[in-house]
Picture 1: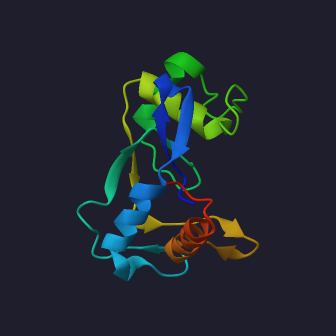
Picture 2: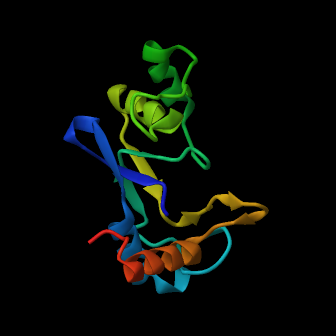
Length: 140
């Protein structure tokens, strides 16, 4: 599933952005394929604002880290157990937001996660989502 989250209830709850990611890939069907890749040409609507995402492939300007240091020193990534599944990524993006930075995901860069030696991809997400919908366990 995509590691893209929206926040609800003032940041007390989060939900994966499954529906809009699925619809985006259906609009760009030529990019539903296996393995990591960068879309070329890059779709104009690839960049989307997010509450937080995985930091497995993240570009962060040094000035963001410097500004965040006012609150957290050099401890940008610390496990956050206050929210089930929150982890260090959510905490990082919360501090960046308080420091005045909006976070974005560029959907044209499909990196996936490693499952053994194989990186997941947009095709894996669509297959997972199709099974979830078919079995009745997906979102409405």
